[in-house]
Image (tube, rainbow, N blue to C red; front, side, top):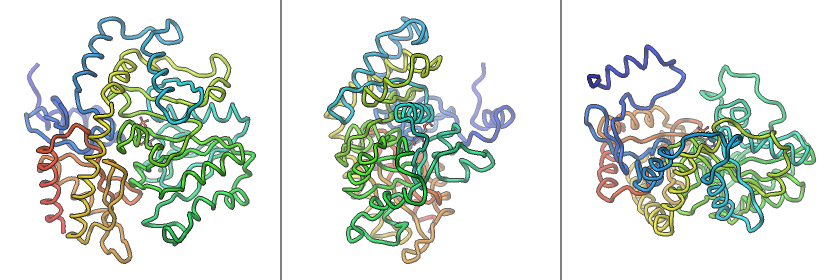
Length: 433
Ligand SMILES: Cc1ncc(COP(=O)(O)O)c(C=O)c1O
């Protein structure tokens, strides 16, 4: 088969694949390694996107590829419900051990983040016998019906796809740069967390609420980090009312924030924790880990799926956990410090950077046309992403106004690659002004 160019493949894509599944770049990959992607025409790109936060341990990490090959040669699928296999139970055991919370836990696996969210809601409702779920403004939890309902942003995620699932209620989030209450931290005394009690008065009775689902750092919503103390208050209010706390760590987990789990930064222990994306370095896998007594509530046969916890994906997951050792987490923290310094430096020189925020290397900068009125610089952010791609850097944006440049690079990026990426970013920042 003759090798096709990017343009030829794009023509095929346009003819045979609907436009709904979006594309950020017009290229097709030939191979990827570490933090570099090579397209089918041999052009190399520094990767600051990691396939949307999936390649924390780097593209084609040796240990992961080895585990995948080894498993593929033994068996690829029996279905966990038909004939069980060791990688599933081993990975469940590992997650139960390493997730926050010193109590008995159980874990089940599914194929995607959205599916993990769906199952967490099923389990929480079953366990509490309550119908309602509280989610947050700017939240993103996926694209299936319940996950899409829990997702906040209308366009493009929800537009035209309603009606949505009932019994979902939405709280403001701790978005300090654009505080929904017009307050300032710390003089606000975390009013946004206290507000949950008030929320119960006119939105939903607390004893009707099964769970509150929240991202420890909002990802798609704009890399929004709540202030210290926020989750402790939220958790205390949840506990008081028997509401389960579900932490969606699908984007923020697996070393992304310098800690294995983002919740650790806030010293908060969720009842259910969701993992996905980087957990299996690109193989479709997501986990639902929770208190054993909650996870065991649904009846036999009430949970599952044909591919959930596929053996190759679980083997990859085990290799990822081996790779995300102390040394890698240390590297992640140091990378975060470097990135923060660079972004703060850019902010001091470019008016368009209104806010720099993040935890560890999960860091972003919010672009605004005017620092005073904070008008979102959405078009400029779009231009920057496009220009960076044209100059050899793959980078993403996020945020409800699409004006936040975010960093989700593999944690194994070398200093040289980082430098190259930053030069491209700054060059193009100059260009869009
Ligand atoms: C926080 C969060 N939850 C859930 C999801 C959905 O995951 P998936 O795309 O694997 O369904 C995402 C995806 O971006 C996410 O960032």
